Length: 222
Image (cartoon, rainbow, N blue to C red; front, top):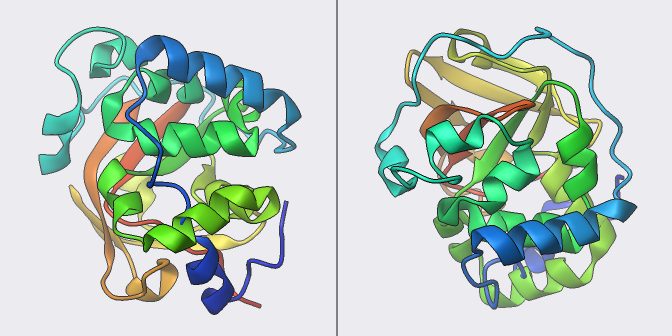
């Protein structure tokens, strides 16, 4: 799952394929492409942190306004689908869903038990240079490392989100903050210019808690 991506310069050169040419995904074609590509994913399921879906707390954050008010892509509609399928119904995550399909991770994410996903919004990918996004989509190993770096072990409620967490890429992500204000330091992002912030948090799917963020994260170098 890891790759030659673990150097910031290479990642930034590579990270650029995801937003350009990836159109907003509808409920039908996005779900189909994700499922088709997901058969070759190689991510193992993480340990079960809680064993149950959180029953309290609503989604929070200014970015939640981009989530549909009703239908399968709404907060209510996402709760009964596994995470890749649920995201495929949500136009706010269409670029991420296309990237998951290209990496063949759909089935692995859907079958994982109790995970947390730091999900870059469409604008997060659009901020990465276009040539870098194109290069990343063409390199499946690098793309897999980037995407699995956004998936944390265990289903984390907001009160548990701050801290250092193991990712499915085998490295770690440190989240700072409390309440409804959470960030990942700038040196943990692809662009490295400002902290990544949670713009819509505590979104529930059948097997994951999702925190939509405004930047693409970078796997740790080393």
